[in-house]
Image 1: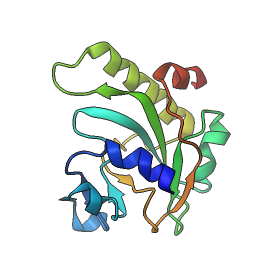
Image 2: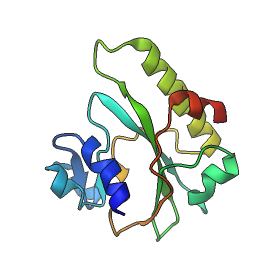
Image 3: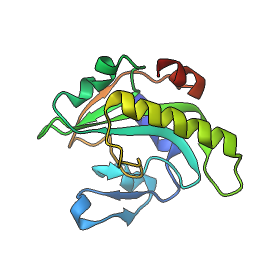
Length: 157
């Protein structure tokens, strides 16, 4: 899991939101503390490093194969119900801050929407808080460390 840790830790916000229980709410903590929680904020407020998809249903971990799309970098599965989060690491992060260029943001949103539809992912999930793939609460598969360009992901959808 060290490779996965090396992909996630340097890209975290300075003080990510995190929790062990969503019903108890979110707290801001240091990255070191947040990485030990079950849920965490992967993307800083002004950047998209990760596209994360929430798939609710049986065999959610295999949604990418069923949809015939690129394999995610990681899959975190809830062992109680087999619902999963799939994470795709972008080669170049997309700026979401006010004043950022509109075209890359719209392109990233279009690719994300097309992937969400192809995967059958929850359309209401916005990726703010994700299952922490480093948490022992989830069954996690780390598939690869390569990053994805938006153009490459777009070719799959």
